[in-house]
Image (cartoon, rainbow, N blue to C red; front, top):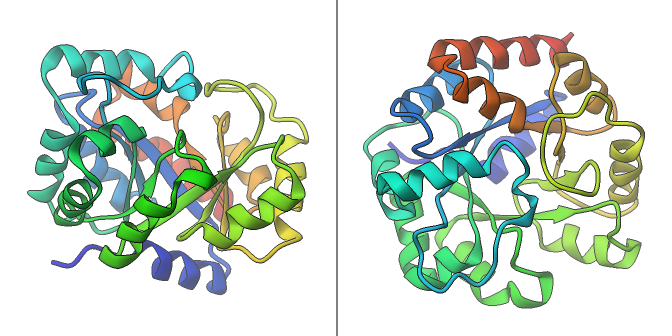
Length: 266
């Protein structure tokens, strides 16, 4: 079964007025993480962002400073438990997921494996999008060319501090969707998002871009609804990671995403 195409799928949803919902799952954080991904794909997710382990790659180029207070613990567990980016992709390759998969990893993983090898493993795993947050716009050409050739959408980020000129360049190079960072700082649940999300989205709206999904800090159905009043979609990470780490399991994760889906569709 061919992997669902992220760029095509999101463009069709956006054209139809459907607000996009992208939950984040850390590969290997729980023994049933693959079952969780399948459950989320049936609960209303339009794509699933899958975090790949990075700590077991020698000579890391960078450390994920944006990982926040919730996400590093699962990633440490994967290092201790032996899960790697390669083994996570191999597990994904054994399943047919009904929605596009977007891997989030750091460039040290890709550089260690090589652009072509990593991209090939990702395609075999049903991946059709990739977020590499520590690879700058000035350095992305080699990796992005491989992605374009093989059919992986390169998703780029716009932050509150990104200048209007740079925002235009980022949006012109981003594929699938533009990830709008709702606020500066590490990831994690927020009781209030303030006006940062609207400011970042408005900056992106001044240029031509793929659909815009807001992430970092979105924690509740009401927040998701308010974000999608200005954006095309929402990425939900820390709130779901916390629930999974507390043992909610695939069914609990699906119930939470179902709540978010109902809120943004209301």
